Image 1: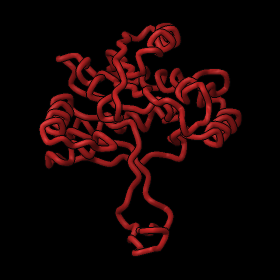
Image 2: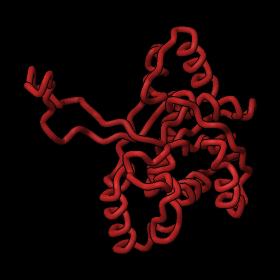
Image 3: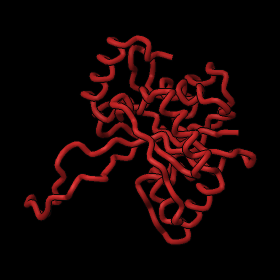
Amino acid sequence: MIDVILVAGGRGLRFGSALAKQFQPLAGVPLLVWSARRMGAITGVTRLIVVAAPEEHDRCRALLEPLALPLHLAEAGEERQHSVASGLAAVDARAELVVVHDAVRPLVEPSAIAACVEAARKNGAAFLATPVADTVKRVEDDVVTATVPRTGLWLAQTPQVFRADLLRRAHAEAVRLGIVATDDAALVERLGAPVRIVAASHLNRKITTPDDLAWAEAIVARFPSLRL
């Protein structure tokens, strides 16, 4: 059994629109639906847990119920970690794996998701990532203090996939220690558990700004096969 936590609690402040970015249309279909369709295509998925602001639950339900995938809505928290914890509390006790994905990464490839799931099944934890391509500078007060070698540096993305018991332990330990991290893999790393990297393609871009959405529109127009 695989449960999916789809994080859709963003308010859209950086997007600059009254409509939160997860509800922005891509080729006429909300980003949330694009991402949910991709998660629903995972072999063995049993339930979709969508974490959103309470006032958006009705909208989420109306958009996602036609997918015919068992749906549960959870309340988004103040920080992303709190939102994932809210979704994790709703994960079925029988679930072997938990997939955590950002609702605003709509073009993640099914083959990449499958590779990530398989890596997590074998190793306990895995996530999609891309290697750092640009030179990295450490800066203080607008002055460069060091150039950081980029060898071995990767940019973490989602989906991130974990054995359910491992993710539960990681979140419980974070609560005990008062730790707030920017992604779930960091919490698992703190347990000393191995976390595997699965290389992602350029398609798994996070839609954060109108320019990102314009890029996605151009990609979908050029490659209609990306629609599920």
